[in-house]
Image 1 (cartoon, helix red, strand yellow):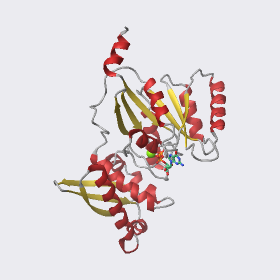
Image 2 (cartoon, rainbow, N blue to C red):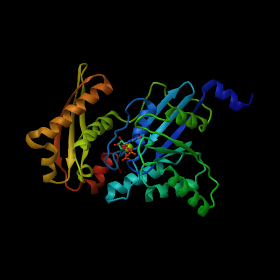
Image 3 (tube, helix red, strand yellow):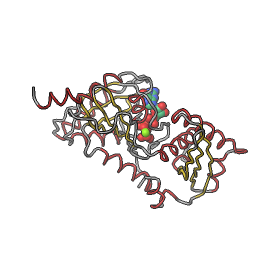
Image 4 (cartoon, helix red, strand yellow):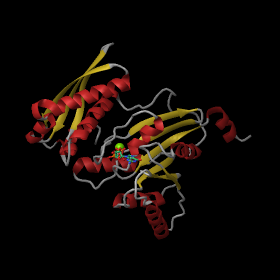
Length: 307
Ligand SMILES: Nc1nc2c(ncn2[C@@H]2O[C@H](COP(=O)(O)OP(=O)(O)OP(=O)(O)O)[C@@H](O)[C@H]2O)c(=O)[nH]1
Ligand SMILES: [Mg+2]
């Protein structure tokens, strides 16, 4: 028996998988489905994920630590640029890269960019063609683009392709099998009962932001940030005070809504979801604050973990 075999028998396999790709392709949906729990917020707005979120799956086979990253998107301003940078650098030091594509839409510039990046990678790469439940299926276009880029770059990298639907859970077992095959033998990196090390304050803020994103349209979501000021954890109820930053007075009115209805809906939906997540009742106190040009303010971006 080799040293590798004996380690495998003792611990199984474990490693870090960076989940990358264009914005809105379904990276966070995929992470949530692979874990069977919601750890990362989801919406149909671009650049929903704003921090790199670690999600940890522990099984008998071993442990996979997923890094859910902000989706790469044509950057407008500091926030967008910082998110793109965070996504690109998340790949460093990981054991496997999982590139997610939206197989129901045409390849875009960002997909092309990730393909080029991968041709230079030494770590194994898996490409998930997501949204397989949707028509049309443009998988062949992605594969062709990959071939063209490989020829141009004279790359010998050979990714493993998988077709999945993160929304419906199709192809998840196969994908997990492939991921475990590509990480090294070794002990788990985190204790087995940990699902994420994402700070509670940031998670609560994200849940509130997700509910806001479901009701806000056009450019407004990008002008919104949520910061949890305090959490008072009593045995029966946790009281959370949070600020919702907007950039202009007119946006404040929209976020509050007519007779405060929109904000009330956000509060109720977030309280409900947080109760399901943490198993304790929540009382949210939300304040909408105008913070002019917060997206250009380094200190605010830093506080929110976006810089
Ligand atoms: N039909 C279908 N929709 C999906 C699937 N996976 C994700 N979606 C939807 O795609 C949208 C974006 O999903 P997210 O998981 O937030 O995408 P993301 O890649 O994490 O996006 P960013 O965080 O902005 O980079 C949401 O509306 C999801 O419900 C899928 O397999 N099928
Ligand atoms: Mg996301």
